[in-house]
Length: 285
Image (cartoon, rainbow, N blue to C red):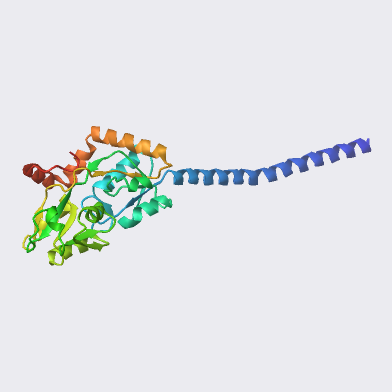
């Protein structure tokens, strides 16, 4: 009898030990599982972020406000794209000449920076369908004899151009007799013309128009489009075909819903009216 009682007590103690052992080991497993789930969730959230490269020196398309916050047509478009795709948007301010290298090295996911679609650029990256036309025009020093772009293709003429822009490519190809002055930012180009150090600057119509309005005593303009085949697109890596398709679908829907018209009314209303009165094509026409 004593032997049976002893065996019964021993069995109870063994079961109790096993029970406590299982309870003790279960909790850490649960904690590890919760930690892994949280890390997985954080990775998913991080993967939703789209990093958009912009050169924030091109008002009113891509620029910064008084507090240094990105603002402008391209900025609003980027945020609206993010909403459409259900992804957060982070904007990286990158010099125009560094945008394509940043895209190729995956520092950014796309470029929205009033970038013209060219055959040369398409060798290295893909573009969305066009969302605007980037008409080029001339800002001319008031004392220069230059009247139109053809007058620049003369020995001794000086043209200020922004590095990495289509204006630079145009000058290199079509104005080989002139001296091309290359600068890293558009403000320096403007200053060269204002101070008479350059005969003219080739840039987009709105920037040219605004600079002339602010400096009527030292500059004048020729707003007639220099090239009528300049389309702006969103730059995307060649392998990101799904993202390109999503951006194209967004552009179609955005146009249909009047998104670009709203951006024009918000940032370009006065200029849109003026350009219509002058019979000059507008960016979203």
